[in-house]
Image (cartoon, rainbow, N blue to C red; front, side, top):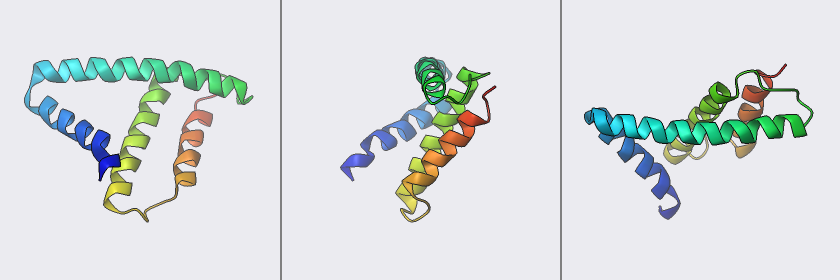
Length: 100
């Protein structure tokens, strides 16, 4: 499926990183950059929605990335596993669990 290309690329990058420590460091840096950007967006969204302030935005961003990638994997294997609304609820629960 064409819409799965990005997910397949992610898996290929992870497999390559497991076998190559130098590449693993580069991939980790890439993910750190993405978590940093997402942390800012999540912090702003949390404040805009009146949910409070994120206590650990970088950690919460990492958990959101993990949830989204894991959900994408599950959906690819079994499209009936859950609905998009379930993923949104999961992201919201992660964010709300880190607010003060």
